[in-house]
Structure formats: structure tokens, C-alpha cells
Length: 394
Image (cartoon, rainbow, N blue to C red; front, side, top):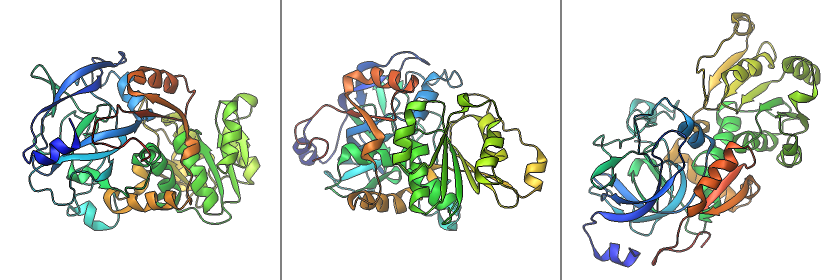
């Protein structure tokens, strides 16, 4: 299907496209022909150009917690081009370059208007495999529903998203790079700037040096932190971590001393800010123990793979330490993500070095293997070129 065909056809219909369909938890993706419905009221249909694999995709895919929501199309960190728009959409037109958003912004609910939160009550994170509007799917195979992931499902040549869960970006921004701002890179930068609001001269510790953790380090460096300790069990991450601002690399396998004690000694009493970027609730406790009394702040960003409950001794809180969570780095998705794209275009933030692998769509299972094995930060998947749509980076 070409862009010209879409523009000429003012009433978009069902299209057939290829998608990577997961048929069960942990099962390899199968490239299938799927039917995709036209965008409904306040929705748009997007030609996906690039989509990067996020750790939360892998965690959800491996989890048995939602075994009933299959077959399913994962993916949420993506860039693309508007193919068609549904009734009531005035913000977008065919041909606009966009980033998908796994959590939206309606601009009118209590949270959106509060100035205190980015947890939209209308277009918040969807975990049940259907769309926000009619609670149905847009994908199907032979008339049977194929479920969504985060109401995005970008591991498909085309997808349908709510117009409040997508943001228009500059047409000169390279789509194969800025897709990282749909989740991971933005989440890390926001945790450092908006959630923790790191102050100049402060001491920071980061647990987990993946895309999110390195983005926290980048944000801390830009805020003038005097010490940035990176904790990770993969020694090969040390060099890249230091390029992103880490001053001290700590591998827990290299010491028999409890990590909080090591942090306490290195910082002279505990870190001002600790960030848990792994998705391990036990490590949340470790991070809180690594903070200083009085004002130490721990921010948790990771999605737990198991045991979602956090265990904390009340004495840590009584002595003035604070634990808080961060969704998408506290950014208001539609209002604030475009500013990060502009920062990237001005070379004020680094994204390129977070991309360790690029693969064609048909090799998507290789991308999952790389992420499972811990051998990549971000793998950007390039979708097949289609007549009328520019290639990634153009």
C-alpha cells in the first residue's frame, strides 16, 4: 500500500500487512499476514519505519502472568509516518513523522491538568491487550483477534494508535535514532532531570547500565554531578559507561563486601541519589540502603520480572530516605517529548551510542535473543520499505 493510495482514499479501509506475532509466552515470533482495521474515532494508522526492542517487551513476552492475552504483537518504542487518520483527528495529517507513546496525554483529566503527574487517567498504560477507545483490538488473523501491547504494537509494518498516544516530530529527525525517545532513553533522562532533579556537585549511584541506566548517567553528568557510580555485573559495559558519564564502575562480583557498604565508603556516607534500572525489587532495597540519611532519594525505573513487592526496613525511611517510582521519566508525553527530539538534533544529548545492533524485521527473534543474553543495549529493527514512504533517517 502506498502513501498516494492512502491520500486518494479518504475513507481508509482494512489493510493486510506483516507483523511479528507471539503465539504464547516465550515462544518465537512468527512473521504473519495480519489484517489491520482502519483507525477509529481519534485514532491514526501509522507506517512503522523503525522500532527498537525494549527490555520491558522481553519481560512481558517471557512472563506467564498474561498467558491468556495471545496471540499478541509486542513493541512500543517506535517511529513512523502517518498513513491515515480517523474521525475527529485534526492534529495529524497523512505524511506526518511521529513517535509512538506507550502512555498518552489527554490534556484534560485530573492528572494531565495537575502539573504534578504524567499518569493520564484516560490514556494511561494499557496492560490488557486492547485499545483505549472501544476496548477491542485492531489486528486480526482470519477474523480472530490479535492482541496489542501497550496499545502500540510496533512489531508490525503498520499499527493503529490513539492520537493521544503519538507525538509529531520534526521531519528532519532521523527515525532510526529518535525511536529510542519513545521509552528507554527518555525514561532515563527524565528520571535524572524531572523526578530526582539532580543538583550540581551531588553523588549518584546507578544500578544497571543498560539504555535506561546510561541515560540516567548522561542526565546526571549534564546536571554537574561530581560522582556517578555505575553498578553492573557485566564488566564489558565499563568503557561505554564512562563515556556516558560514569566516574566509578563497580562490579558486585569483584567484592565480598555488601554493595551498600561499598557505596557508603566511596561516597563518604551514601549517595544523594540512587537509581534502580534493572527491574529487581531486591535491588530497590539495595539502592535505598546505598543512599545517605536525611535526604537520600532512590528512584526505581525497572519493570520487575518477578516478586513485585518491595521490602524496606522502616528505619531507612524514618531517617529521611525517600523511595519513589518513575514512569517514562516523569515526562508529559505529548507536551515534552518533542523538546528531547530538538535536543538530539542540536547534539545536546547522545542517542547513537546506545544503539549497539540494527537488524531487518525478519530477524526480530535474533533481537530478542540478544536482549535476553544481555549482549545489546538497544537493537533498532528496520521495517521493510514501502512505496511512498521514505527510508529510516530520511
